[in-house]
Length: 255
Image 1 (cartoon, rainbow, N blue to C red):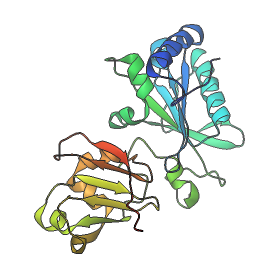
Image 2 (cartoon, one colour):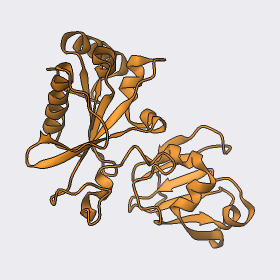
Image 3 (cartoon, rainbow, N blue to C red):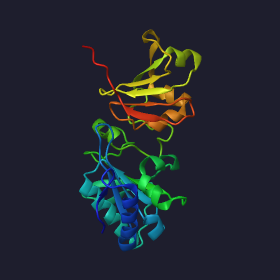
């Protein structure tokens, strides 16, 4: 139905032109964002809102060809009058397994629908997340869902206040200045080994403390803005409401 398009392979202007062509020709454009060492892959539609007055669709961690095929199939059914709703189990999307849709919290849209926002501009749009089951046909919110799949499929209807992929009780490093004096976090480091450091920039080695990552986001929701910081990256800002600047971590090697 349309050509495959992946982020990081085409500049913004060319992607917008291609998106307009494919929506005019096929009714939608499909965008795939490949997985990184830290973040899972995801695939989403652009154009279902404009063409069929239906929410856009996003799904996570599926093989690229399968994800695009499924979104194309779903679009064909929408074209023929199907309206997908939440809380209903669908058995005709995947072979031999179930699927459900959940409503994407609007606070999560900007994190995953960049090309869609660029296309729709000031026009708001809704989105549904297609959720798949594990090898035992259990959904992520069901008991005994397989642990290895938990963080491959972030649930975008419920994670707007805590966007990090890790468990909420993950041990992270912060400073005495943040814990005792409520000084703002101005420097965040995501080490190559996966450890997170949330620093106030005035700490000494003896000031480092351990805290669950959720305690940080509860006190400062703006930390969610760097939830997608890659392994080996750091982010800095000048004030608690300032813009984050991201960089690769540079280590000083001692001779």
